[in-house]
Length: 214
Image (cartoon, rainbow, N blue to C red; front, side, top):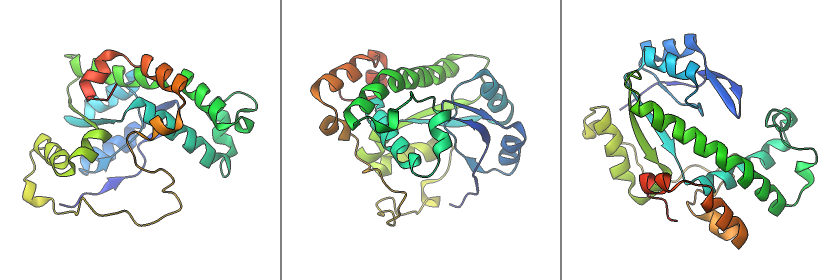
């Protein structure tokens, strides 16, 4: 099963990505796969509603996603100083120790991520939003990769035999692979107070919906 990828379909940066109608139309007409960290902004919903019948919203445990964001900012600080301004980080953030940076990200990033997911859950229930949404999670993927892939193939009504990629293949070593790919690394990095605060910021509905360990 081969599929072309449209590498860029949006403009902007965190925390706001807006889809580009021309690029989305091009991807849809050419049956291309496209992915983006785009939220359920009214502009994005209108464009997706126009060109797509199905889509995937992929999430991960928000505590781990928050730690990942801490690492991501550290990495970009060395090469793309402008990102720190776009991300609206407070003055002196890059000079804080890691624990203080995590405190800040827990307080500001997790509420944003909760809102991001809740926006897509709301869109999924909206009768005026035409596309069907398949919600998937990183935790589902690492738990059973084959079942995860088959669930996506079933959603798009694709024969399982057409997909023959080695899902257990280890990615080639690359300088950009700075994350460990673990689902619960946050447990070892966050201190007790941070673990408790981060968990309290996540609604029970999301824990049950995505089977995250509380």
